[in-house]
Length: 336
Image (cartoon, rainbow, N blue to C red; front, side, top):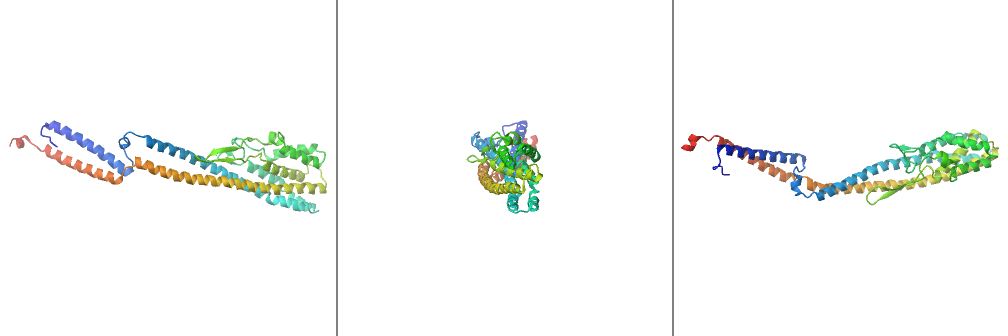
């Protein structure tokens, strides 16, 4: 550097500017070395942020899918747990009723029948399960409670018993109440949506359905058989022992068939769980690849940065030496 044509003041100002510039560069390189991120990204990409913006948009979409899958996994897991609990509630009860009804031992049948009311309450509770404030079996209306309580259901069944002419008429009317379109169950008991949750995106390519709702025919059948058993247990309908055995045998056989339906539901729900797991793995792999691509743009090379930092430090040291020497010059030394 040639400073011969500059005045002392000019040299001093130029040295100050160079020192300030080197300190700024030193601070930038030090930050890049410690954080691993480029500080002057615009200069590095030469003003073309298109590729980086594209990567950021894709990563944001992946985050959205991951968040949605996390919520869905909780809900699907909750459904699976509820279905398993329902199966456990009715699994032995159906066979016990059928077996006890085949015997002419009223005490044995009454002992098996005593838990009917509690089992009905349990099934209703499982169908009203909530996860993260959302009802699992309400279709798209996740904010609405799917079913009224078990005692409210029984109040409607007991009302049927008061007008039924005999036990056959009673069971026929109860079946119609639960299963007929526009019947009592749909208008008085079920509070969810008739639309299932379908076409839920879990990735760019995959969607799943959550078709189970509290008004599913299999659930109605379970509730019907348990309600009839509860009504018989509580004596709201007058029956002979033969009629009692016949009605409860039919209810028991219905519960055995319903257990198979629950097993099928658990199988289908397990398929949804596997799809969510597969999508989660694929999403993490894709995110890792995209993060590597983003890192190549935004991350500073540690070896390159360290070399540049060493060069700047040398320049600063040289500038300090030069500044010290020029500050020691005197007019008498110059005139010699």
